Image (cartoon, rainbow, N blue to C red):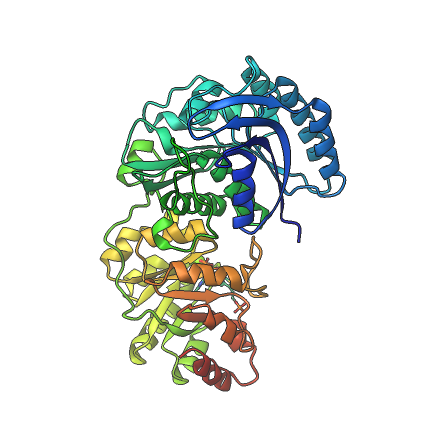
Length: 502
Ligand SMILES: Cc1ncc(COP(=O)(O)OP(=O)(O)O)c(N)n1
Ligand SMILES: Cc1ncsc1CCOP(=O)(O)O
Ligand SMILES: [Mg+2]
């Protein structure tokens, strides 16, 4: 599989930033890095003494050598010190995007000024960056100062972030992540704000004190690149990159007399390093003027166990009764695409059966009917979460299960304190058209580790053969449809699942 990330940037002799930080990050996060060096800088922890661009011929030769043999999935650009280099790179990127079998995704971290305060690029370069480079950039990752340099927008309040990103998108880049290292509001928080013209994402972590931060910008952009190269969606890459940064900042160290550099550890797995997804109805959400109604609230009634066991998801009351008679204790009525009046009787019957067998009966989608008839719980998907009245579900004392498909959705769901979080789809499934690729066991294990204090349910393409390795990842429950409905002998299948999920 091609996980190649190119970094087109400059060498930092102190190795805390630039090409050196990029390659450390790309390797630590499991992607394959290649480098194109635009300039060599002589710097240490207190000053940048000299910046010298390589010849145009050398820049082009590096780009051509890689393009002919090791094309990139993701290209990350950092410090470019010469106007001519910006022009060459912009032209090459346009060519790659037009002619490669798969167009590379381009991330540009506009290194305007070194953390030591020294200017590092040729005068007049910003005009060429604005007119020639930004139009081929998919994700721009400026800090507040770089936002001002490129757009003229001062980030004076949370509300000003959206306007600045809109301006940058008008200038040609497809999306913007404003890095919150130096924002002059909510100063105890480090907020990263993403906007692509449609979707806003804000991630926040407490600001870390007494850490060494040289190389954080390069590292964040490279971490996004490395994660996206492994087919994570951008929202998940933003989460991993911020967690990688927090983890590295906590272990940062000083080597010289001045500012030390971020450390490069492996894939982040510690809950404490992960950011919070900012919900619209929260202090930070109000400050940023985020659209939407999600708020954390007090959370949902617990299922009283982290291990919900085998969880059949079924579309008739007859099936529910059959599996209840076989001893199943967690199950769901999932009827798709019917009017509420067409399903109300089945929902009433399902709820009554759940009570009769003292089982956890969840109702999929039809949350108003679930409240009306006092179900044990409701299961909602990502789209439903934004439109359902979660407050009403909580007030009515129903449990809530939420579907998720990656890091970002998991963190967002976690904030709502649901009764369980479903993780899917793990394998190919014939039961439902899924818009994304299966997660696989490796990711499932990472998600389960992050959710050790929340009940988890794995779903999608799980059968008896796969169940042992699924359960080994640490999930508390396995949800299945066809493993039961297409079984020759569903009762013995249930017994065998129960042997595996103990
Ligand atoms: C246990 C469990 N997990 C996931 C789903 C999928 O729910 P959703 O995303 O709402 O999709 P539909 O099932 O409504 O198609 C589920 N039902 N149960
Ligand atoms: C409802 C649903 N949500 C994600 S995968 C899935 C279907 C799971 O069915 P199966 O167990 O037959 O793959
Ligand atoms: Mg649903």
